[in-house]
Length: 398
Ligand SMILES: *[C@@H]1O[C@H](CO)[C@@H](O)[C@H](O)[C@H]1NC(C)=O
Ligand SMILES: *[C@@H]1O[C@H](CO)[C@@H](O)[C@H](O)[C@H]1NC(C)=O
Image (cartoon, rainbow, N blue to C red):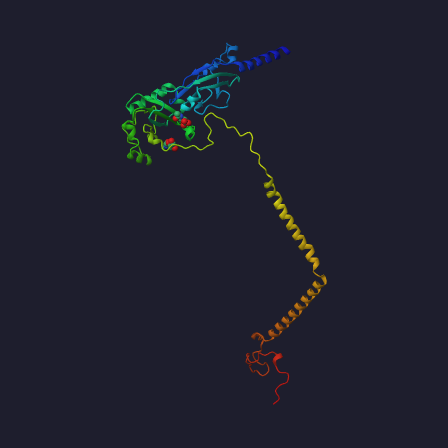
């Protein structure tokens, strides 16, 4: 009963240990500054190194999904100049980038590449040692950047594709001493991921450099006439616009020409303030900060407000208790009564005055008799508008 389980555990451990230990021999590569460098991570190479492939020779899977993870040894990520791309687990992966003089100063860089078998979860490691050298002419004075619309970045990374592109540029620059300086996915420049429609590509920027000035054809892309056409999204007029067609579709409105031959273009030199770290150095926080007394700050922030609050408190309690007690209660009561008294008299007088004055108000006409019912004699309403209160009680004695 226990035997199959034991075998299972042993084989699991073997796979586990094998996965830990499997490693390909170190590989040295020699990129040079100012030139695109591409390292292909070949799947077949890593696939053969997976332990399980050796364990059961009878059934070698024809195609294994493999993904990679690459990082600078001892660090979680790649150095800044180096990029990694793999479109899918069945595609070739690339490490690519264009080292600068700064990277050359750092010298050797060891990149650790881990390959994962997505079926068995085995891993294989390989160290790739980048020995960065310098090219004879560090910076090519004339550089042009093309935007290729119908390619993804990994499609132009293989050597043949680069050659094909270079031939196209050769023919428009009228010379054959060009170098590809940099290749950048449009996504790294803020481009958008295209819709998943057949034939739509991310696009890629390819920078080419030369020691010879730009050809007339390249200069023509920057003519006023063509710039105006680009603004209006019209077809640009160019003698050489079909040199890449149909392999590469170039956005002729998006060509950047950089003339680094005259140093005046660099502008005023940067003046760095202090506090800028030197390359490769690390920030060291000061270990012993100078002693500082916080007594005055303490007094100011805690004691002063407390003191003010205390004073206010005392003042308020004095007003609330002592001042009120000091006022004679009897005095207060009499004055209150006097007040009420006065008000009552005043109010009553007012009321009487009002009542008296309202008697002066004429009676409404509608309440007056228009004629005497018995005599039929009509009475002038205006005449009889005195109410009885105004009729003299003792009539004129004639
Ligand atoms: C190459 O392109 C990348 C991405 O745009 C950029 O970060 C890098 O500085 C470029 N390298 C050179 C040498 O121009
Ligand atoms: C041209 O390039 C710039 C930046 O390099 C980008 O913002 C712009 O969208 C590009 N234009 C076209 C038409 O692709």
